[in-house]
Image 1 (cartoon, one colour):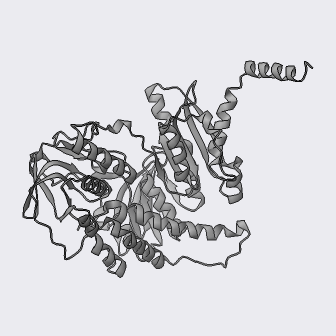
Image 2 (spheres, helix red, strand yellow):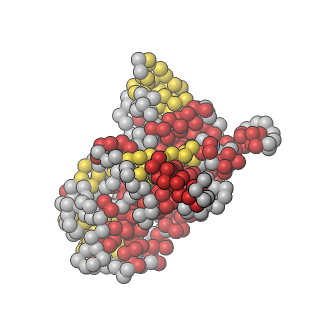
Image 3 (spheres, helix red, strand yellow):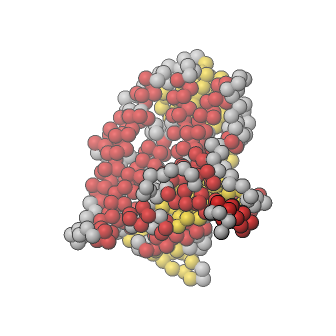
Length: 511
């Protein structure tokens, strides 16, 4: 297995029974397949299910656990953990809302992690081998390897295909730091195996995974230090959003250290000492666990891609064109193995593009382009940080002139009543128009709020028109309407205001 399922409890046994049954027997290969899918994460599962539903003969190959990162070591366990961490934070803040709770430590960490495993097992049947077999997909467990441009092997069988899809995903990228490997560390692939709360946790990396889990563990009672090599968190995000999140993490007790270079790691017993340089100072931190969250690397090794004529790079992954076709026209790729947007929803839309292009590229249904897709994303800290469309930095690099309209949550009634005023809605429009080009939302439920803006962008609805959309009162989404109001006020130039005044005086009888 690529990563262990620990502990050996009922929930993990139920998970494994769904996504890699111990008694599973690979079916015999059935001639030439319309589509062979390598990898059973989100991209592979969506591809296989969609193609089989269209009547294609499909084979799906997975070397470890169906469901991939999202189900097993990503979205599902992390968001389940974050829910418990949010509950703990609400308990601590209850007095501010007039609710008295008894003092003490309310967190039962073992129970929190038990729930993580139970939720994962509960959701596993949707990604199960049995379900995909019922959809008509031939499910193979084992390592796939291409032997030529239209054939691959799994176990002792050869599978021939008309088209194939690479959906092998990505793994945690581990930096080469002296002593790290021997001292021991965790990544997102093993952090959810914990059953005892680490008293002291060090997080390497200030990206989405590092920020989410740093906040979760400090809320669950760990002492957390976060080391980030850059000068701000979430480097892809709006600087104001990143600064607000850094302030929130520090306010909750996370020791956030910027411009940090880890020099060495040493272990003594159960403790690990991390030596690092921050600015001109060399410091050390002694911790119980280290979480490495320094990015992801595509899974491209040991696939025989050279034999298949598929070009790839160890860092950026499989090379694809705008149709998600590799350098072998018979092989496509989608998901983390070929795209920098390493999100479940990006893998999903990539799979849908691939099915259309791989199976129907000779007809009117094919030839969908990745460049036509706009991918929103969200980091699920508290407050959440969500984005869609172009950023200000990208606009500057392209020479695109934007105007920005911003509404702080301190002026949104629902945010005030909720005691959740930390955040803002920031919307960028093309200068001289109300065409929405991008947006950032920082709010407790930013991941939901950003969808309204994404829909507006997809439907060509301008910011001015959003001001006229009726929102239920009170909701935090009212901040979006308020941004529309801000835009519409810019249209009331002094000249227009003068003419309006003349018209209204005339209507009053020429006063």
